[in-house]
Image (cartoon, rainbow, N blue to C red; front, side, top):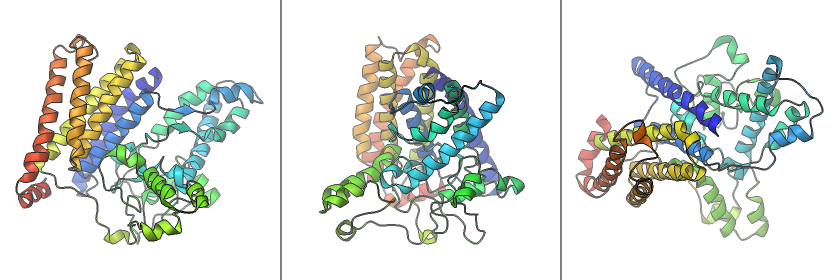
Length: 428
């Protein structure tokens, strides 16, 4: 966990700088690639994924360490060639796990968050899941284990392979010449994120585009078919925690309601989106049939609310960063309590972005948890005053202000003239 936290403490500033550079270039090119609330939702999703990992909310059925110790046919040393072989092996496993997530109904719930943004930018790359609690794709690592690739090599290469998938989530880079035949490029990945019929379930590769071409899932980006992003059944919320379970909840409802016992069982493992016939008739769902006429999800938001939402995100990032650099000094229970506070905070301010009453209730819970954490530690926020004096007072003030402004936005601002609110929103 400490190694993971250290890696992220270096990676996060890099991600933020690249997102800011993309935004600056998009303004220079007059290409809109960011929508404020969508970007806040995306970055918040990345934070929830980090918190899940720090809390240890992952069940490994069979660890790679166990496999390499019990089924390895060879014993090899950690050379440069082994690191390269491991990178390729992880990419092969990534292609198939990615493909399974897209094509099996229940597994789509593990991945829907990544595709839920109706924009395509570097921020949406941070939309990572918290719903994949069980590590079910261990069998894809059997080839590496049979070759005897050391566990420490896999542990080192895995985050490098993961972070290397960040850069191609952008609309600003067009075709990349000869690299189009070797690597996954922004053009390839735009196809993967699109809901156009021509592009659905294509380009699963993570680093090397070879796998799609080898297994028949490659699709080139067509000039006459500009990609439209999102999912066929729009999630219609900015709350990343809700998005993580929205597909699972739909399957669960269909499995409960449908009459046939066989349908109750097979719905989980049928192709993604499959529903029993009686559910299609009794409980129809609205899907996007023409992506070019689809309206993107939006909520009424004043300039003040947008600025406050940005401030909420900034505070959450700063608090999470302090957690990352303090992991070695905290007990697991302290990490979990800290992470729960940030999870509730994200749930609260993204619900406020949705203009939902649950934001108010969530803020009361957040204020209660935050106050309790400060009181339990003798008036200090996890020892932060040792490094920055009086910071606990600032955090306490922020918690109180957050509750006050959430009530203001929901009970006062929304009661004001809605047309004037919409005019301010459009000018923001």
